[in-house]
Amino acid sequence: TKDIEKREVSSPSETERTRSRRVYIPNVDIYENNDAVMLVADMPGVDEKTVDVTLDKNVLTISGTVEPEAHEGYQLVYSEYGTGDFERSFTVSDEIDGDRIVATVKNGVLRLTLPKSEKVKAKKISVRAE
Image (cartoon, rainbow, N blue to C red; front, side, top):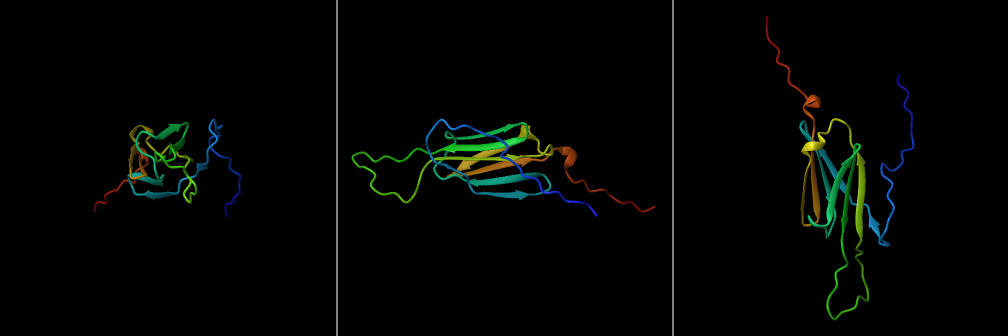
């Protein structure tokens, strides 16, 4: 039998905040097939100008900024929906081809396609009769 050891894992990237705003951790769904891994992150209010995706030393970081909506001539009296920044980091393996990552955002939903490198894709081996 193989011994399984539990380890405490710290956050892959420690960041220092320069803005005194709320920071939300976006909910993410992760899908996988033979060719790629896809991440779908809910980041309401972000668009292509206010979202950043970086991959540095196998740490994939997604971040986005949402500015509070201001209505001319009105003052905010009550709010049930908070605005702020989004940030989340993932450690990815060497199996991901970082040069071919594709990111799109639509209606506050960020989609990342992380293609697997050719060397790790499953290959079908044909069997011949002798």
